[in-house]
Length: 479
Image (tube, rainbow, N blue to C red):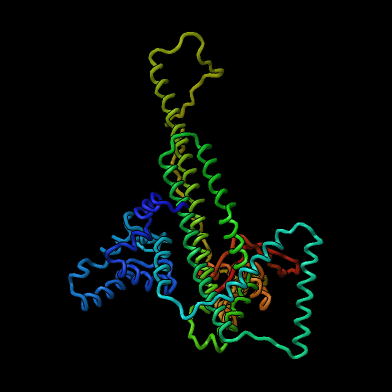
């Protein structure tokens, strides 16, 4: 973007972040939205909950500043902030809900983050950022190198440096980071983690804008269906194959790995237990920041799924219109046939090889005969081979409570576990019926995640000893 005078004038007039900074109630908007969304890392809030929180804040401010300071009701302020001329909140209706919900827009989050940076920091660390710059440069140079000899030479240098460090440690020369260096790196870690959450909201907004454009184009399209589908898939592939799309897909694949999640949890626990870091009393939510990333990424994936749903709806509507056109053609044929009834075409029009009429005379119908009433003897003697009631107890029944209890015990020792890991600890005893019960438990669990991009194979043996297997999407249970 070019920062010339005319561009900045347009940006000041159109960008929601700039409009927020120059608004009369900017302190109220920034303070409330920061406490409601950014500080607790909430993605969406219902109208009732958000309105109640804003009403409490307005009551406190009116007690100090007077009733004329903020005369409108909390719900009126929320609706005003969600208008297109403001653009600070996004108002929408979730699926299967008639209550409006609100979400923070990326522009508002940028403005609040900039305002927050004006307050200054405890200290400005530069060492960790300089080391990050050097590490990024090394990764780019090494990753772009096409000469195998040059890569091997660089790896040999790194190997020699690692061997030298191992020798120094074995000799008792152990270098550790001092308190300042630890605080510097933790400060940069926290800033990067919060920026990742902001990036998720912006990526989701980009996909949502594509969704809106597709909806508008479908509503106004009057050309061929193939042309619209070609444009839709072209834009969808352009976003998926863009730098942003590929980076998001790589990040999501990395984060969905259970081993990576366990490694992140372990590293966070060890870092937060360091005395210099614990003395700063970091936010307790930072311990589960990677699960916040996972939730934000899943919401972005749901936005992408809505694109496919919109396309499916368009195809269904087009199929209905085509069927309606066929019925109109048939009706036209019938209308013309009725019009030709009084003036049939001359000449041979229709020949019937065997003309005839199928007559059914009334007297040919059979007379009524009363139904036969069988006589049943209620004295029945059972023989030796009579069936017993034991067959009713031989049906396959899976104890769902037992499987749920095993899942709870497994989640007491970890934050997340996959279905194959559960079955390694407790293999399938009742075959496919027990596997279907696990799927039902995952479907009823609101915290379970179905990853359609990865699949697992489940193996077991049936009652006759035959090996069986099933291919399922990756299922992750969360505490």
